[in-house]
Length: 265
Ligand SMILES: Nc1ncnc2c1ncn2[C@@H]1O[C@H](COP(=O)(O)OP(=O)(O)OP(=O)(O)O)[C@@H](O)[C@H]1O
Image (cartoon, rainbow, N blue to C red):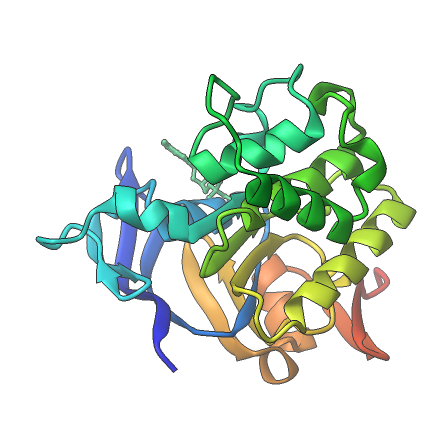
């Protein structure tokens, strides 16, 4: 299995503080990773490195077997091979554009439709991804009029449009109600278990949002890795308590996870 992402001793320092602190981590082809950690731990910073939009202050980063900053590595060739869905991108997308256009523009590396002629095959693909995410009835709705959950599902369809080898999801279930979260977790589970789906890295705050099919977990706190490895080995009460800084009990219920704090004594 080849490396989809490899970080060696990577640090990101801003104003004298390490937001990411000597992180070494590798993601192999076909793996589905969850990044867990408290607010400000450095999760989004790690995703930004993986998406090639952020260069580390020190250390080595390879994405899809290309080393960032090395002669011959062109991030503009790498970026279409990486799908990204997150709030930062949602804010760049025109609110008046339809859902179908919002997904279609990804095929052309754009955020807004300009004068390009879309090929029928691209439109078919956009419709198929939107269907997979349960958005078929919203094709002509404007992106700005969607609910939080509908917007999140559209962004994932959009991220899949370039047929990426690596899919990055930044808090895909944040802001969703219980039904919306469960619907999304089911859909992410189907994607995670699809053998031809891209390797995946998902940032979340909640173990309840880990869909079945996710294989590995990285836990970070204050920019440092606390645990990294297969979910069934590393997603323990001990690791989670250290990660979030209070006593927590994590349990597996069927193929899902739940965590709660111990009562105050
Ligand atoms: N450009 C910057 N300059 C200084 N500090 C920054 C910069 N960007 C991010 N930070 C800080 O880096 C830390 C890590 O940020 P990051 O967004 O990666 O955390 P996170 O784990 O994704 O947090 P959250 O769960 O709250 O989204 C935070 O304390 C943030 O305030």
